[in-house]
Image (tube, rainbow, N blue to C red; front, side, top):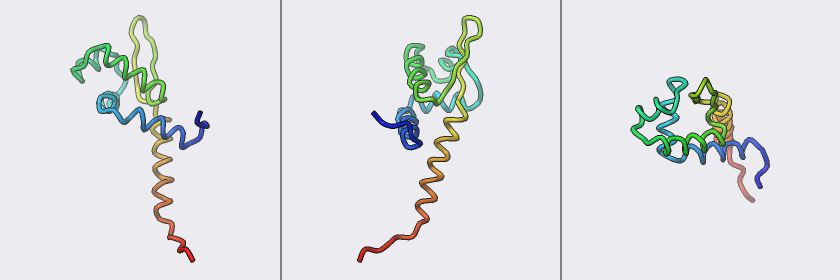
Length: 103
């Protein structure tokens, strides 16, 4: 099992983001908190399909949810997005390092 490192978190996030349907859901949630019925209308997907992908996104830490009465509302977890952004910045910074030549 992978250690809980920044790289491990990035891998989990990237796996969750590697599915076009999940990207569509994330883009929908980028405008704010939504319930499944709103996501169904915006994505034209069945409730069961959306629920499956929401579960994957939640397990990866990309989204959070809250219950209000009988409705569950989902939103992007800014901390996960920031974590991914920081990992990418680290990669970009490493690209600026000069090569060390072999002898």
